[in-house]
Image 1: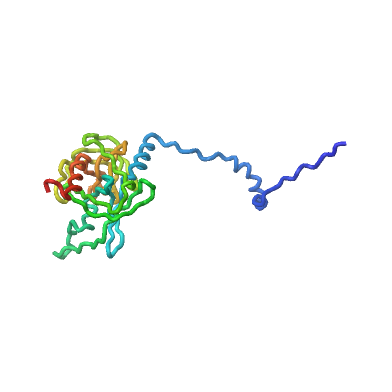
Image 2 (image 1 turned 60 degrees about the vertical axis):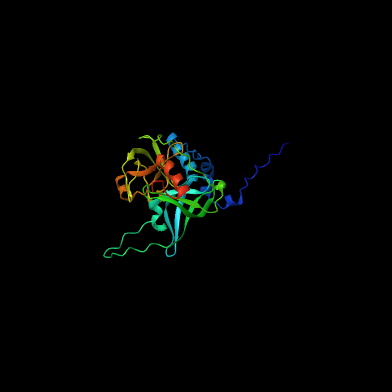
Amino acid sequence: MQTLSAPAAVTRTSSEARLPRRLLAALPLLTALPRAARARPSGDEATAQRVFDEGRLSCAALFAQETKDGADTLGAGVVWDQTGHVVVSLQAVARALGLEQPAPSSGSDAPAARPVVRSLRVRLLDASTGSTLERPALLAGASAAHGLAVLRLLDCPQEALTPVPLAGGSDARVGQAAFAVGVASLSVGCVSGLGRALALPAGLLPGGALQTDAVVVSELAGAPLLDSSGRLLGLLLSPGKRGGSGLFFAVPVSTLAVVVPQLIAFGHTADA
C-alpha cells in the first residue's frame, strides 16, 4: 500500500519572513510589473547629443584666481590646436588680465581699481582619460578690434587636447542648425543672420558677425558655435544687453581662421 506524503512546506527567506502578510501576498504582482522601456532619441535629439558629446571635448572653462575673492568664473573658450592654444572672448577675460579699465564709480573721476590676478586657469576634459584637467594659462595674443584673445596652456600634454574642427568659411547658411556647446551645457538654435553689424568696445567687428537664436548665457561667452557635424561656425561673444532681444552673436569662422594664427604668431593682428 502506497503511503502519501504530506506536501512539502514552503520555505521563506529570512527577509520574506519579516514582511507583512499583505505585502508578501502582493510580491508576485510586483515582480510582474513591466520594466521601463529604453528611450529611443529622435533624429534631432540624437544629433544634439552627438554634437554635445563630441564638441565638449574641445571646450574650456575659464577662471581667474584673485587675491581677494578666490576663483571667479569668466566664461568659456575653445581648444584651437594641440600645442595648447585656447581661443576666448576678449571681453570675458579683459578685466581680469588688466586689458581694460573698469568704468569709474559714480561721483568720482578716479578709475576703479583693477583686480589683482595671480593667474588665469583653464579647465577642460582630458581627451585621453575623460577626466577633468585644469591648467594655468598665459595670454598669447589679443585683438580688441575682433573681440578675441588667445591663451596658451602651460604643462598640458598634447594627447589631452581635442582641437575643434573648422567649418568652411562659406559653409554657414541662414536656417541651419547651430549648437552652443560648453563643457557641461548645450543650447540649440539656428543661424539667423550673416554679416551682421556688431559694435564692440573698439568699434564695429570687421566683416560682420554671425547671428544665432541659440541662447548664450555668460558662462558660454567664448564657447564654440557648432554645426550639426560638430564643426566650428563661430566663437560666441558675451551676450551683454543684446541678450534681452533673443539675438546672440559670434565671430564667424572665416574671421577666426585669419585672425587667430596671427595672434598665435605675433600676439596681435597684422594691421594692429
